[in-house]
Length: 506
Ligand code: GAP
Image (cartoon, rainbow, N blue to C red; front, side, top):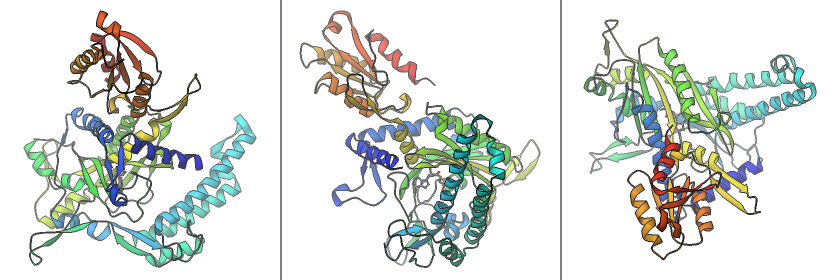
């Protein structure tokens, strides 16, 4: 675990040193859980967003994109349930003064018991070798069974308490389990209180005329309230989807782990409108389709797994997360939710406007059901950095840090270097750069030795470095170096573009 924590620290300092991510307002000692994307980070982030948009909108005839406002009518959040139910139960430790999400303390406790079960299974696997039947072991081993029962017992108390806003019940559970504060080690807890995660502000110029409005905690509601406008103007037929990317804001109780949990973040969401009764088919379809998207970039499949929800959000009848193995373990990266007709029906009721769809195939009008896919762009950014960050020992004894970013996501696709700053080489390099830059993000660099320039671009994740030397002036060939293999090849200038493009097609 210590190594994994070190890895997160290394990623954070690499992200700062190489211009990917900075702490917001750093000169004022930063603002908690708010970050700025720097010159290379904003390119990487844009590329992830574009890759998502291409897969979801460009590649689907029946999905269109919108860009709705962050501010919305306050009634939107009443209808969606966020005013009443977008709460987390919080608890403070009186000795360390640290604040926790009460349900997360209990979930972490259950995860420790899960860990004990996994250890028991691993031990038995080692003992019995090939003849080991894991399922049978899990179903019969007394210690495993006792731990499973313990977890079930905890769930049977936690989830009803959460559903019924029973704060005392959660506090009693924490006390009965003997959960201690990880910082102080004490069990000296405050009461558990509900905490609404929405940020609010005033709209209007005078105090009397101003009304309280919220910064959206999810982009999805901008899609719901525009659903009929888009359906009509786009002449969309069910099933169809509406996608958007944009900022969301949550006053998270515990915001930590770099850009994993932020108070201002970006979501990439798609609401897929379907015929009632067909939602489970589409739920499965989107689970599979989204998992394929994740692995399509070349990140190994073992880095991802599904986690089906036991406890469903107030709007869902089925939900699964795609989890990624971050440096701090497997954690939620994306959610796929079957949201039923909850949102559209609630907006119909509160707005008094009909949000029905007339289905010509069955000649019926209904409120569509919705399956949504919702991924945090910043979390995807962290997943990509965690996968790409590689420390390598080289054959010559040197070390390098290389960001093995999928080519399609790399901030720069190619860096062009003149070998020396004279003899017409910078001019030739500039000419090559001008030939490439309308198609690719390119970087020009003439400072330092070629070796140092290679290292710098390894650290930025640039897939190709092109070096212009004296031979280039004679025969129009250059050296092209590939980032991961570090192999160098002499190619003709006119072949560079094709080489880069070859790896970008996917
Ligand atoms: N519209 C559904 C929705 O918002 P969610 O599970 O609350 O569902 C979806 O959020 C995704 O948004 C998460 O899987 C995560 O990737 C991202 N996300 C949520 N809260 C976040 C936060 N505080 N910081 C960064 N990303 C966050």
